[in-house]
Length: 285
Image 1 (cartoon, one colour):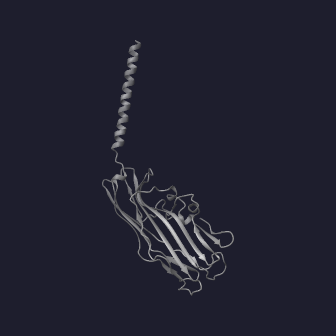
Image 2: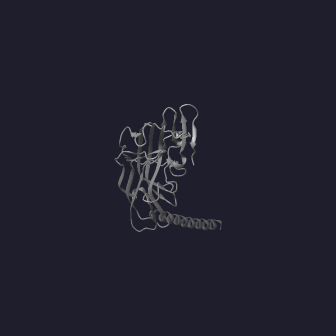
Image 3: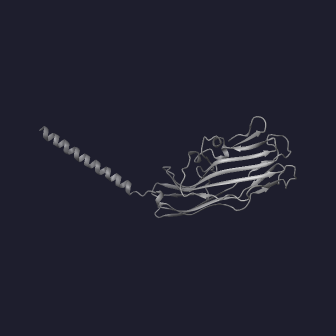
């Protein structure tokens, strides 16, 4: 009797185990059969990255500030995305981060003002987001991104593009002075960026880096403050920018490149006198 009971219990256990295995295998087969977007299923073509072959333009229209406008960095790419499964949304576009910045405005032998990114300057982070401040992590949300919401039954052909340049104002006079006397004598700027073409699953936050571009913008302007307005400033050094590099490998995206703050909000304007302690002129936002 005991043997029979044990046999029946064993038989029941075997049936239960068989059903459990069958159910599990069914789940595995179901998962494996579900279409999934992977890097090898995404086609990227006609990737371009360039900086306009024209010099930086200096504007001396204001008695208060000098302005300069650099040539544009431009990037674009064509992408073919595979069909997007039901209940999935993918965004494809450009993410950009600043990796290095030197921005000095010299005022003779008095001192200099300096736009700085403290965390980057001190090596606490590798990059800072260069988003528009609204569309994190994306550089922008017009031509810079395309959104695909599943289900889609066939491949989607997309084009995404972006551009960037500098167009700042620099005071002729010392920024912490009440005087309007022109003292600006030199402007130096050297800034580096990484720009990624990325596909992101909006639900799972999975990221697929499709392309990586590195580029750099440099500005070198000599100023004679004793000259009349309109003829004080001139470009020195190379007239054209070094062209961007489209890498043949993909660099990972640092966490600080994906969220707040962006470079505009994180930067601080310092006054660094030739003698004395530095002073914060404009704090970070």
